[in-house]
Image (cartoon, rainbow, N blue to C red; front, side, top):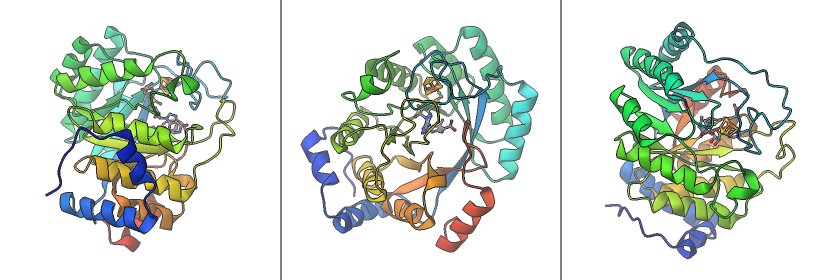
Amino acid sequence: MTEIRHDWSLDEINALFSMPFNDLLFKAHTIHRENFDPNKVQVSQLLNIKTGACPEDCSYCSQSSKYDTGLERERLMSLEEVRDAALQAKKNGSERFCMGAAWRNPTDKSLDRVIDMIKVVKSLDMESCVTLGMLTSEQANRLKEAGLDYYNHNLDTSKEHYSNVITTRCFQDRIDTLENVHKAGINVCSGGILGLGERVEDRASMLQTLANMEHHPDSVPINLLVPIPGTPLEFADKPSEIDFIRCIAVARIVMPKSVVRLSAGRTDMSESMQATCFFAGANSIFYGDELLTTPNVAQNKDQELFASLGIN
Ligand code: SAM
Ligand code: DTB
Ligand code: SF4
């Protein structure tokens, strides 16, 4: 049986990244098979419930107020709009409905409204996930009481590279919120983005932080940067396909029982690349025509891909 470890050294994780590609894929896929059905991929649908005007300066994000990305700000959606979108997601076959808000943190008043939205999603018999920025432990407890299943809060990159990407909060703020979420008994969803100008060692360091948590995140999204015109990272170098797949494989090896999500950036990936990511241990995607503010792969394309791979 796979051993679940929480004591990974950076050298060990760097060594995984340096393995011959076929050896790495074989190791990751073997662990994947021990823990999951390799022909099953979980699907979640996203909805941006509050768009733009975020006070944070994340250099990759279309919704930061610090950059001119041409995105129009919108108010928090109504409960009816959320219900319609969640119903549609259910019809499309999504198992989980994830709602995102462009906030540094929710106010207690806005949290009341999100709680009503969570209850609507639960009443449709879908899993619920929200990503609202930093949370206090009281706020996390309120979300748990409302029936929230998952909270998404990404580390995004390594602690070493963090201040090159975001200056309005620090890495420890992310860790503190993740602790509040875990202590409240909510499943944790936390991962990162590749293509933020990081080195391979930063990817290793980010995975080390995740894998050495007392409880591994239940879900680990690995995003490929969607370059946003007007942001500082608009022209950042893209990681190679092989390097991206390596990161998925290493995430699978160091967190054997976590669901690894092939997250944003799939529109830039070939079908064979996505298939290799599924082989390397990715077993979740965002499904639906839109992510938060950018397009996703068309649903019929994903259906064709799953059919051709025999994935359900
Ligand atoms: N404001 C909250 C926060 O930052 O935690 C929640 C919403 S925020 C948009 C959620 C996550 O989306 C970010 O942590 C980041 O990982 C991801 N993200 C945002 N913009 C992205 C982009 N252009 N490409 C890839 N991932 C992105
Ligand atoms: C995650 O890791 N990726 C999603 C979700 N969690 C909230 C967001 C991707 C955003 C991609 C850029 C956009 O659409 O604005
Ligand atoms: Fe705001 Fe989240 Fe975008 Fe950062 S990633 S600017 S916190 S919406």
